[in-house]
Length: 74
Image (tube, rainbow, N blue to C red; front, side):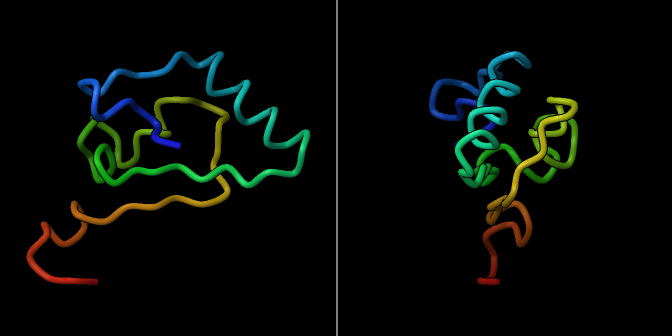
């Protein structure tokens, strides 16, 4: 999931919502994957946007463009 609604102007979700998503994933054995392509690499003031939600850690994080500035593939 995206950690902030990027297409809607980087709207942040509430901490309660993100904690609930983490709890559901834990309960049913689902991997929580955060898509940080639009909001990662410092674009929200922290290295990754999920860092704005204390205690909510993903199992996997995807990020891309900000790492190489879209100049070269990685």
